[in-house]
Length: 397
Image (cartoon, rainbow, N blue to C red; front, side):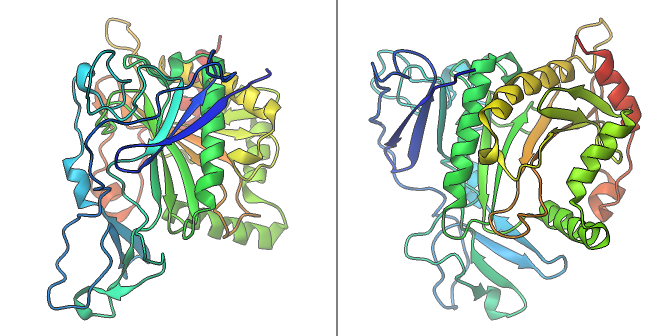
């Protein structure tokens, strides 16, 4: 498909960036422009007012912070200001919906009365830049060198997939999904260029069971100031595999899954979807490009076109995976996240892939992360990958 979009950038009342990605006329040709001014009387909070107990110690930068867990070697962001974020508002008060026609003021985040796809800086970010502070600024909690603290440097963005509050990603047209893919790639490039960002993660939380606080169809993009624990573990495994074989681990995984075929659920000219051999979740599937690709910006136009079709088909099947006692399909609560190569570390070892998984183990039943999973990180699966794959193949057109 010859996909054309128009990218228009503006600033919200508190100076957060907002970007319209338009694929419809008259906007894509420039015949009209979305509303760019934001009339709301917003202050610049951005999470910079998080509580901190610094009395008696040296001054520390204002803004979100993260503390180093010496027991695990992981950085833990503290995002107390997010406790005050909007929680499950009614449709007529959702901040992700377009502005109400004729209204002088609303607390919605998008100034225009309609949009195709829009991206903006999160009003309640887990990571944010702190003016005048370097990303590697470090101090000690309570003056103890054992507990390093740094600014939670980075960026958090919201991606609104559509202006329809009652829609879902799976209900989008291939053209609109293609625009979302362009937005993901655009923002991955932009966030990777920010000082201090080490990894970019595009993801969607869908469903109250997952913990969404806004029902409007949307996703998020995080620019982390560190390589995340899951990616760090993957890179360690990949490095060991490369040392033994001289080959890339994720490439070998995809080729092995394609040879076996028992867990492959969807194949297109450019993409393969499979249930991983050691799947943890009651429903889990990976979607990977057939070519070695480090991240979303590296995809060709043909691969992006094909992804728009493949992803919609995968989501269609996932929404049919479980049925209620009366035979009605149960919309699947899920997390869908793009695993991309980090900005610097291990780029030659990583490989792009999408992971979609759900906490639903049966209609009306959740998998709770109880003692073994939550306390020890020792996973116990409630099913087998082969059963998951067989069910997804049953649902093919």
